[in-house]
Length: 436
Image 1 (cartoon, rainbow, N blue to C red):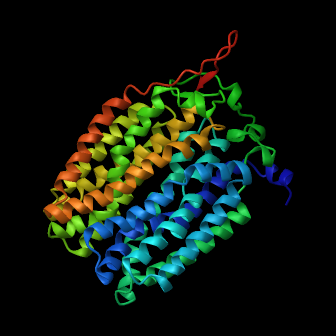
Image 2: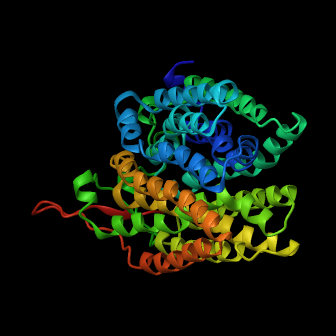
Image 3: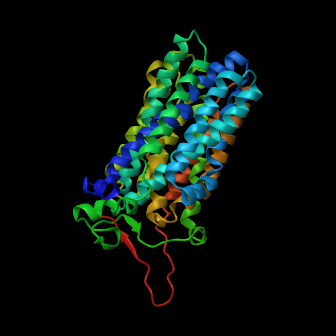
């Protein structure tokens, strides 16, 4: 079937959305969130202390985000499909290296950092987000929230499933990596066969404008208060606006806090007296609740200005992590998980959508590439700091409470992250159109 034939079959953007959803589910969600179970069992088998447990996850998360500028350049130079496929194969190689070569903390940390972490950077959420920004304008929040929901869906399935796989293997954590390596191979094949770079490649326009007669991005008439630029921003122009720095600062709260909890959540709950099974179920609920936040943004994000949704979401996350440090009763495992998970899911989706709304699809890969490393760094440092403080004081309360305070502060700051104004040359007016 040729590209012209494909165009006649309808707007490919919706098909591509679910293809990318499947890739994130198969290849990114399992190692990212499943490590909360796998690393805990690995740490017990290799006699890690809590600092080494945090370092193992930090090594992965650092390399899963720090190369974002390189990933952005790869997307622009060789394309989304190639970037995802190569990254998935790297994750698969790393998974099998974990099975056969990781016999000490240092070996495990190196494998998690290099092939697994760097591979996850290439085939994680950055490329699918760039793809959705290219394919959708009017329904960008819906598309981004839907494709990112694969991460939360995969996470809430990964934790209990990998726990079950390890249990069936007699406590052998390496069995989980065999499974994850296999799913990454499948993701590489799916990417190679089905991912398309842009609507123009298919003879289409964003939101299906060429196929169904809808207005294109440049023809949208203002009928909503949601700001979505139609200007092409440069990276230099982006970093001359105050809003981008406010968005970056939010990483200190919800993003760092989430990675701290993924790395230490089970250890925290077991330390509060809960069983490993109950702790794993609670973490799964956190990840499942992220879907609630993402779908809330999908429903409201194209109708309510993102910074207001974002401010509420980070406060939800802050309340949840504050409660997590004090979740001593069986019933307390549920409310904190719902607040934390929904707050993170909504916060992350709002941030990704705001960057696209404020600075446009052409700048989007580089904007993500140069802002995500900050989140990666704080996300990587957080678990190590949390583990060190636990080893010293025997409690996560101070760290979790500190994250809650930062979330509250960044929630207030977000109210001032107003849509940026692009300064056009004299005689020209910057075109910024609200979405329909």
